[in-house]
Image 1 (cartoon, helix red, strand yellow):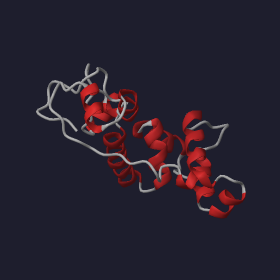
Image 2 (cartoon, rainbow, N blue to C red; image 1 turned 90 degrees about the vertical axis):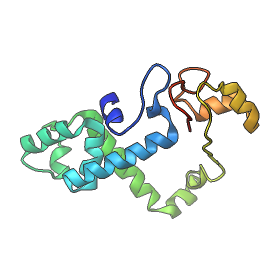
Image 3 (cartoon, rainbow, N blue to C red; image 1 turned 120 degrees about the horizontal axis):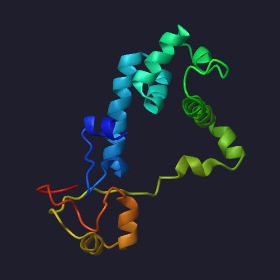
Image 4 (cartoon, helix red, strand yellow; image 1 turned 30 degrees about the horizontal axis):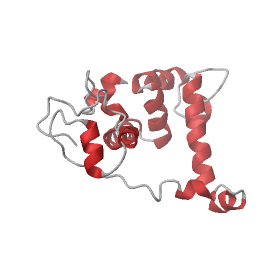
Amino acid sequence: MPKTAKSLGLLINAQIDERKDPIKSTQAAIAYLKYLKASFGKWYLAAIAYNCGDGRLKRAIQEAGSDSLSVLLDPDAKFIPLESRMYIRKILSVSLLFHNVDTLKTNDYDYFLYFFANTLLATIEVAPATPLSQIASKVGISLDTLKSYNPQFKRAMTPTFAQTYS
């Protein structure tokens, strides 16, 4: 959400949306999840709050009278939104799947284990208002590839307001 992203130091304006920056948004997400874990004391609660908001989860816990996962996921009581109930179920399912590497390998899903193994991301510092086409040319990749790795740029250049930009 924009307000949360800005509170975590991400820029959102007419030139850029750092929520879409794969590195900066990941760093912000880690910081936010750590904050939520410290606030709620349990990782599953942090994950639910990440999805539906900490205020919404606090109200749900108060209404349920419990922070138990089985209580909060009750489909009849609907303490938390359906999207959040499904979100935590997906996280738990993937966690269980990745804790059983043999199942992945025997079902021919082991490519998940190596999906990003050959992907190399690099961060470079560039001057303000540098055309993305110039950056792509200098690093030897196509403009489309550069844009695919940098979806945060809303224009065909780096932001004009910074002395340098990563």
